[in-house]
Amino acid sequence: MTYLSFLFPPGDRWIFFAWFFLCLISLAVLWSVTEPIHGPYNQLDPGVAKGVFYRQIFWMVIGFVALLIVSRVPLRYLDNIAIPLFLFTVFLLVLILVVGPRIGGARRWLVIGPIHFQPSELAKVTFILVTANILGRAVDEGRGLVAALVSFLVMALPMFLVLREPDLGTSLVFLAIWVGMVFWYGFPGILLLGAGSAVLSAVIMFYSESVAREAWPWGLYVLLILAVLYFVRLSILSKVVLLAINIGFGIGIPFFWDKLQGYQQERILTFFDPSRDAFGSGYQAIQSKVAIGSGGLFGTHYLQGTQKGLAFLPERHTDFIFSVVGEELGFFGAAVLLGLFLIIILRGIDYGAAARRPFGRFVAVGVVTYFTFHVVVNVAITTGLLPVTGLPLPLISYGGSNLLVSSVLLGLLLNVSSRTFEN
Image 1 (cartoon, one colour):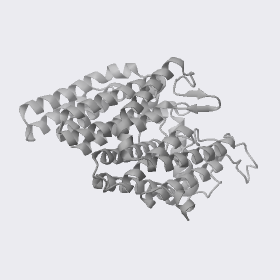
Image 2 (cartoon, one colour; image 1 turned 120 degrees about the vertical axis):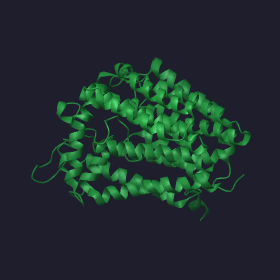
Image 3 (cartoon, rainbow, N blue to C red; image 1 turned 135 degrees about the horizontal axis):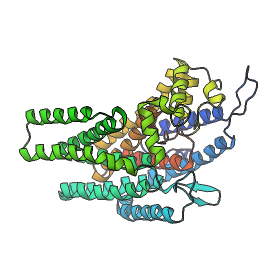
Image 4 (cartoon, rainbow, N blue to C red; image 1 turned 30 degrees about the vertical axis):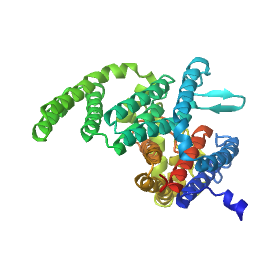
């Protein structure tokens, strides 16, 4: 009985079983995408090697071991080594820009024999730990705004390095995690409002400049901001700062646009008009929506997805694996999958609110933000609600680095859940 209990990590059983069943779903879907389609099409090559399935099993075993280890390490030890771990991952991110092989036009992997590892994935873990360290100590010492500013500068470092790879989708994960953690910390709401409205201003300016090619949408937005600021109860200085931020981000978007890679620009333009390149950059989004739409309520049945089986759907084992779930298992299967993620997110929020140690509290929130952002963005991309950015679905998409890191993060969440009342 003692040996059997060792195979179960401490902490919340719901979170652990959610991890377990998500891994099983991943294996089932990866087996499907590596199987030739049968029936009237005879047997067609699936286009994805069976080795993908077996390598995922290997990484799941490694991820399980990592989850067990991390779930048992005392949180105070992780708190103490958070800064050295973060600096080590920053070193790896710099190293990869210098010596990393260029694969697919980007430097994202460190190659050690047969293993390809993405340091940017490990950086997500250490960033959560170091930000929890900074904000947790600020709660104890009452340093307030200074800690939030320091954490922002810490976030900007890996974000900039990952952008240089280039990897826009992963770089945005750091920003999302930071926003979630400082919001929980109690960052002034006016500053978060300013950040949100600034992003909206940039999006509307981009639409005005590159899609509509008319100035009035952004001009109308500025007038709306002026009207809102006139009626809300804020100091004159706050109103001026908010207006300046919105105008600054709007005017700055053309300069940011020029810094993007050509394929990134095309993906964004195709998001607004998929038909502009239906057989190029818009092909993935179109075929993904066709696959999900053809699934209906209960799907086309397991192993019988034609979009997947006939290789119409690109990246069906990685970024667009949710489309396979939607096609073969339908709305019901997709709902079960998202329900398992919802268990992790809701239970994680509970432990973030209940944990007595500030460090554990912020670690839980960081993990919840990571999963929320990844799941929402991945599903939005596959359903055509966001431009394609190449963000995997945690624990489901094929990929050793992301699977290992997602397991480690859930190990951290289990760790926090088992030490909720620890001072």
